[in-house]
Image (tube, rainbow, N blue to C red):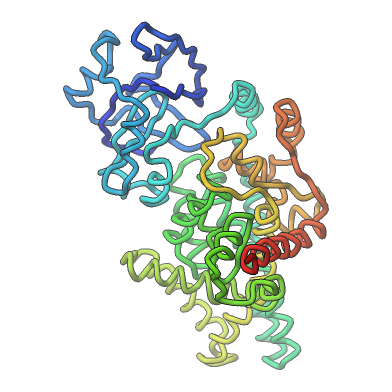
Length: 468
């Protein structure tokens, strides 16, 4: 659990009412003064999880002021009350208040210690950060927990790791036996590309703490796979990916869609650039740039430079040491066959080949979906409207690392991916009941929708840019 020291305050909804809380149902009654009285309320000392993410636990420090603010049996009339207008003023990096389960938390001093970085909390500053799930979703999660859907099959993940290691060992054995001619170099490059892509999916599993029951083992495995097997920073990935899960397709809070000025995505960004007569490149042809620049350079250039920048500026020495071990391992393994310069070329050739694979898999489920500025939607709607699935098959599951079940992953990010197929019918039924579109498409259509979405965004830019 995340241990935090926060100052807790009660609040009243004025004039805007509270939404439904995550793990409990709030029955609101209007008192004579317009404040809200909850039917049930979690005490500070009770451990509480929402959206698979831990909240403040029982070890939080409680000051005498907090005792007067509602802990224990203090009468509710002694609670400090805050209006929504006042709460919403505390939305700066140096002054952050969050609303969680009908209580106001000042998390300013703790934000830097959040595992996903300061920006994750800052995205919710001045808002109700309680996961806004309907009662049916709450019941669904209880059902899935009873079905042990959050328990990992270690055999599944062991085979996945063995696959990665065998591919790397096979590449070295081919070089040792046949030499470093061009046909062998091309062959081992494809073997290493498959190994690297599958490593990307395995690090994603460990990053979401979905393999081991103890977080420390997931963190250790994450460093081994992400840093040692792939040569990328864990800190960089956590900082970027947690923001994406917090606010998917919400501009500019989701870094995965904040890709201007190279690409314009969604409906808002193209119109904004067009009205301001901004034309860094010819956006009419951005779908072609996606093929020529975006696909091949995402991994070897964009991700690598960002990872190195984060490690250097943040002085993340542990990541630097682990990532260094990736390059040392490659120089020891392939240096005798290609030399130092040739080994560096091999590393980036593999990243160049891996990049289109990862780019298509990660973008097919989000770029074609709804993008907007902050609308303060409930958790369930936010995740479902911003994601889509790709049809299930053995190949699709393997090729995408089960990210073809993107909706289930976003709703239950700590669930082991081998269980997504089992829970998908229940999620689909829940979406149908509440009028949410559950999108599931063939994989080739999903790839094509990326380009069609870029063309649509380009057309919106053109209309705004050439408007007189």
